[in-house]
Length: 367
Image (tube, rainbow, N blue to C red; front, top):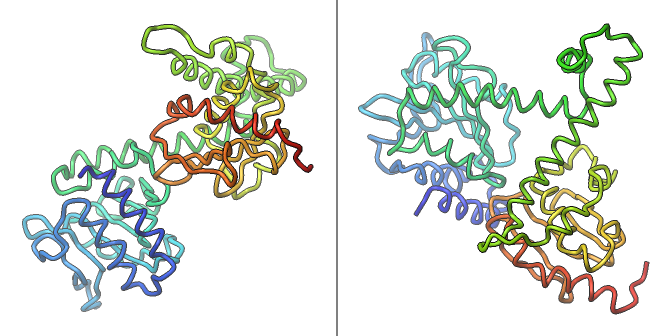
């Protein structure tokens, strides 16, 4: 079984067990040990996995770390565990800091069984970085995340490859965070830099104000154009004939497909995948109803797509916040779950998506 399948199964079991996990020890047994086992290490073989690993440090004797993964008698990965409900902060990693300094391990993991924070020593040799180079969420991961986690596995582990990957992940994460911040609200420095690439004159205060608005709009338009290009690629069948091309061409301007104000809650993040899914549903419904009647309303547990922005007229719900993606379709009373493997599967559900709208249109619905 591939690692992604093992982690998906573990996530499914964890969701059922999590309310029964009351202690740190239970967290280790139910979540952390199966995770280590999925990486190919035998948790019952002390030559591979050492629980309660002891390493005396100066005057401190007998201190233990929860697990050390060992190769050729030397620790290569240190793992510190917290209770499943615990928040993981750098303050909880004091033992990892101390052990990292005195062992040969170059990878340290802080986990509560669901979230895994991976550290190394990119900033100063033999001193664990304060910021993780990667974070893995058992309840919300993608194939790219699994590809990186797989580098920790017994068959694939190579410290040089791992450190190279850690270096790339650290800076890619920082770049993505910066891009996200600039997309939400471009900084003065960013606007100045972009403006100087296309304007040779003096940037007066008035021009800076104008360019600030234009840069923000251009950023949004650029992202929506990229999404549209992906949709156009997907909307081609095997014979090379375009499908839904007219519907896509007639899609509204980007500003009208943005999530409504409700989705701006600080605890709700509308992902690009959800936005793409929404645009696919709108394209499917183009000939059924005016697309301005098809509205996205994102909440914490799913991204809802409604007719007339009316909760009593659900078309479908996109459940993309966990490792196993699925859609709830409302062409039947109460809705029905349908698992999907990719956004392309939405096209195969087009008849049922249209049927959901037709069902609402066929009978009066209270406002």
